[in-house]
Image (cartoon, rainbow, N blue to C red; front, side, top):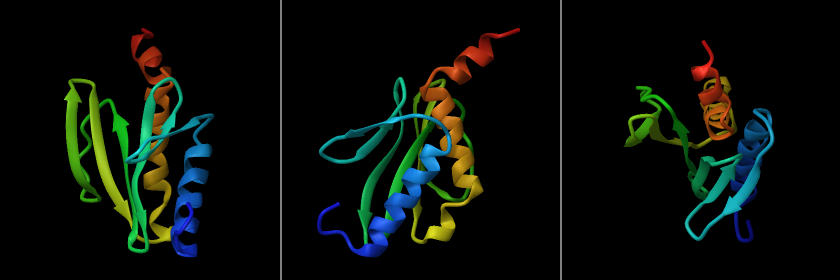
Length: 117
């Protein structure tokens, strides 16, 4: 996070706190993003700057919401939901819900629950 403004660092740290509240994860940095991984990468910060944070979560269903800037369907049960936050207040319970749902999918918990009769 070298070279980032204090506001950008605070936004990233709050996003990490949201992810942490959903369960254990490993950071998976790559050239173009910082991934959050349980068994698979379930969320990522794609861009961080003075204007905000761009991120995505992977959900098993397509969820329409005006806060999503783009939704990519990777497979019938894997949809990448992109969103942007510009302030700490926008990292709210709705975002936490998406992240926790994505964490459950990425850790295999959601798939196991779907198979249980």
